[in-house]
Image 1 (cartoon, helix red, strand yellow):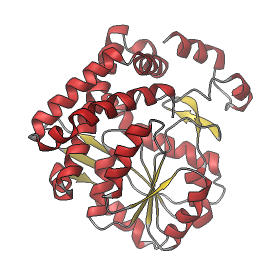
Image 2 (cartoon, rainbow, N blue to C red):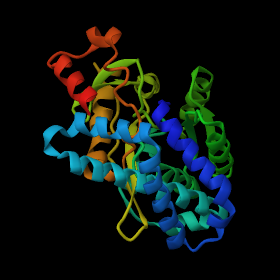
Image 3 (cartoon, rainbow, N blue to C red):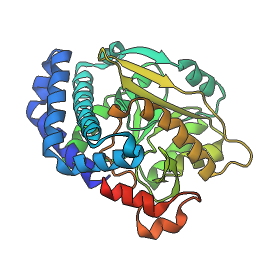
Length: 317
């Protein structure tokens, strides 16, 4: 986890530590407004996260966004994550029936059923877009057997809060790392679903993400290649009326000749679709291209990209 994300985590954790019990009792719209104000305050106070977001937006959107537009979008990102963090916290404290009420639209649920029917489990993938925690609890509440891979937050206060909420969700949570891999293979062998968020900085391979090569994990592709399990990408976004819409994309299976690089390239492309549609709900605060622009990884970039020019754009953001 990047330092910029850690700082914003601590900001939210301290806020919930102080106001959490009050938030749980608030009417939902009031809690969302409070979360939005916290996010706006975070935009002004948490400089490291703000700078990272602005740099990432400059890299991805270039001159198609003015400096003022990038600042406005970054503020919306902070406000969004303030809203959804408090919404998830409040909803989980009030029970999972509340979660079901919040999801008012599901597109592609039949893809989940089709994938499970194949009997090889599901390698379910999403990004830090919208409110993935709501989606996971919703899927578990709807009877999907689910094991979730979660990176332990670097901030211990935020981590303890998130762990407590996740433990009540009706799904198994395993920490990211080698020790969890066996549990994932077991779940897939049993025909169950696993959920992974592969859109964070890694040094495994370098493949395009939002048009620029990014350090990308290979674990999801390895699991699919070794088990034959279908890959299903999805996302959960907050609608203008503050309810949620889940979008589940059509599953695809590893084909002959596929390897980790090819599969993760396709997965990144799938994940991009939701991010480009709802950029104000994506976690631009994470230092996604940190490994990509590390000098030691320059030789590992795919061909056809102007590394010096892209790095200069990234650093100028």
